[in-house]
Amino acid sequence: MEVILGRRSIRKYSEQSVSDEQLKRLLEAAMAAPSGHNKQPWHFIVIKDRATLSEIPKFHNYSKMLEQAPLAIVVCGDLEIEGGSGFWVQDCSAATQNILLAAKAIGLGAVWLGVYPNEGLVKGLKTLLKIPEKITPLCIISVGHPLEEKPPGNRYREDRVHHNQW
Amino acid sequence: MEVILGRRSIRKYSEQSVSDEQLKRLLEAAMAAPSGHNKQPWHFIVIKDRATLSEIPKFHNYSKMLEQAPLAIVVCGDLEIEGGSGFWVQDCSAATQNILLAAKAIGLGAVWLGVYPNEGLVKGLKTLLKIPEKITPLCIISVGHPLEEKPPGNRYREDRVHHNQW
Image 1 (cartoon, each protein chain N blue to C red):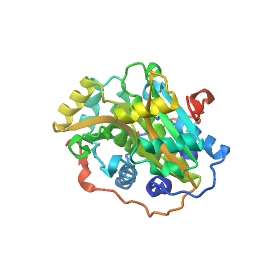
Image 2 (image 1 turned 60 degrees about the vertical axis):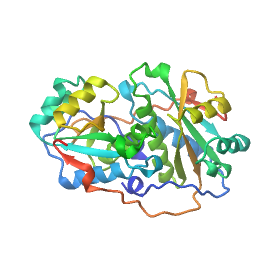
Image 3 (image 1 turned 90 degrees about the horizontal axis):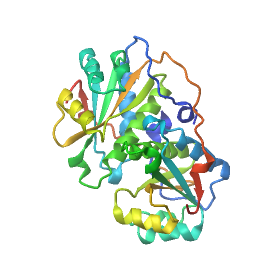
Image 4 (image 1 turned 90 degrees about the vertical axis):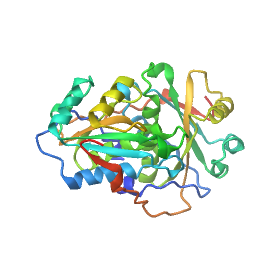
């Protein structure tokens, strides 16, 4: 619970790299997410290459931290595997949230950068990463060793809770 | 990490009810999720009313466990708050995943029942729960004290991981 309630978006990182073991934990967490009819319609593009990371802020306005981040994971939906149910966005979002929480749990910091359904961002990433036609990038997760500390957000709002009907 | 890797879909529950304190923890977890531009475009309809819970399986094929479940939470997106970015599905999915993990963390069992984008299911829920026009139900989470135990899923697949480009 402390991981869930204490997780915040972390955009400043030290120069330390993310180890292969840490990366594996993040990807295991991602693929432990539930998915509609258990289709698991996801792929993960792990970017450590500095030049590739630095290309992204050239077309994605909110991704400047990638110039310093040691690692990004692009979460992609596979529409062929999903099979037309329309659940791939939810499935890949659950996987993304698991990565953010796993990062927090193992002492890393991360932030979710929106891509889909912004057509320009989807196209920019598909071109940069040579992503095939049937695959759609949902988001980018920037990951590193945190250089900032934030208190829990406390976003609970009673007025968003309804009982038995609206 | 054990919560993330060990969470499974739980569809069988004892007759024990979910306490108000437990419910509050689930909702705090939900609203601790990140959202695009921090818009928090979500609402949660908590259903404990037995008659209402039993209505849902009449139009939702995969929701038969609700006839026994002590609690369901309908996660809804508020398109007015979201403001046209198209991120509400991702935001509400992150909140949903947080609820599933929080349930596991406090000893409850839960399962994510897809609704959106199936038009018939969206309409059925909107009518049953008197949900306003600008609000869209994303999914239903069935919650209870688990009467089944499942080992971790181990869904990690190396072939879904790509490096630096596709």
